[in-house]
Length: 398
Image (cartoon, helix red, strand yellow):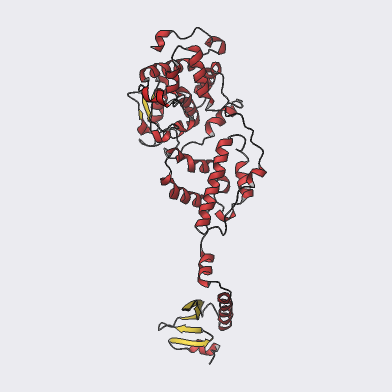
């Protein structure tokens, strides 16, 4: 016989059938719960419907009817319930999980900036949003401020967001794959500048260095000065750690995994570069952490140094362009051989045969060259006209 409210209230321990698989299960402790027993794919399964304290007899019958309908339609009620209970993480959490899952498979360790680019440009805008709410419109909002300012980085960030959303779909946090093909239609066209990065004329660089040195010291200003002194790429500075640097020998050894060419690069540090590092060493938070960081762990943004130039009214010039300024200065103002300057820039020889036979890294000549470059940069009170003096004599290139 079917159950009644009174029978439910007074039922003894055991299983009490209401009909069509709906049962009241009473435990020896007196706890009462509803269970629906059904056959699915030839297997008997019990589906819990809740406690009698929360679900009345009428509500249990309605819930049982709904479950039977789902099973008839081929739906797995247990899987659906698990899906509804799954907590969807924030975009930042999903991105960090994605990074941890993928990073070991990357051969090029320069991808260490994969997560930092999201920390700098994405997380502040959509990091707290559930990952399943990050759609094309949200991605356009993220990329709009940087799409034309740092186009290469912006395109990489678009790819990385896509990777996070694909990862979220695989994890079951997104019901379907998300296409970001429409994102570019909501952004202005990036003009191809032929691959050339705008450089400041080398005659103007000493004035900039004097301004940076005279201004209130910040991590960003120190990083920009250090980058220019050494004619390195911005990422090589941003991810430099104290264990790479020997202040006593004035040497900075950048491991191959952080170099574009994939080969270890030893940088002879000029006296001003060492002085800058010693100052930062005295203010460090870690003996092994990042050199140019406020906490030793989080690198500065890839836009920090560029912003210093823009704040000073310098438009178009890129941080990478100071490498070109160094090259122009070396070729026009010194007699150092071109291969010495190329080695200072860690350029890889395009001719494989020549590269195989050239075993020297011109270290001592590069140390001399970088010292002359630092002297040039630190000329006090001398502008472009003053720098147009006689080329550095041959003995300086020895």
